[in-house]
Image (tube, rainbow, N blue to C red):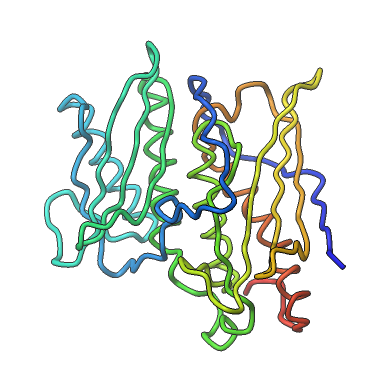
Length: 285
């Protein structure tokens, strides 16, 4: 019998950057795993080299990268635009202008062997205040990715729950396909749930989808997470919903992705415990 956990609302306290409307991602293909959108846990000890922002003006690039380095340092991430270690990760940005007075920043984190191990996008206005918010948002998201590999539980606890294969989230507007998928991986790692790139005998499949509809008071957003076993049967689901102002999620999800993933991961953890019938604490130290 499947288990369903419904989270009726996710509360967002973060300042949201409203951006230009973006096209919806491609429809979710349940039989095809797109692992490139699900970065593996990174080793934060290797540090991060800030390589710059392609297509940006020299002034914008210099100011943004310098401030980003300061923000990352404050968050405990070893980052520099001047020197790099042999195994350092590389952060590369690409600036584009989808609409007048709007910019999109597409970021890649690249390992020393050339593998892209992290992806996210930001959309915001071109004024100075918006740029400062973009810097803080980028630093927070990079920090989350760099620290995702630091388990908060001992290794023996990590092994008690099934590993999950996480597909990219389906149907999310804006950059949600990448940002919500990445945020869920970080949230699962914080709960010592291993996200595997390859199917294993005892692993479970985690599928996420986003659906939106119009309400008089705003846009109703429903997020559904489904846990599926190796026989293709759903063993449980987690549903989250909330009404947000129109257009809120058309660009960068920002901290909303973290809030949604954090609540969803608690439900997923409960389902994994049910699947293994284990008595593993659901709270974090």
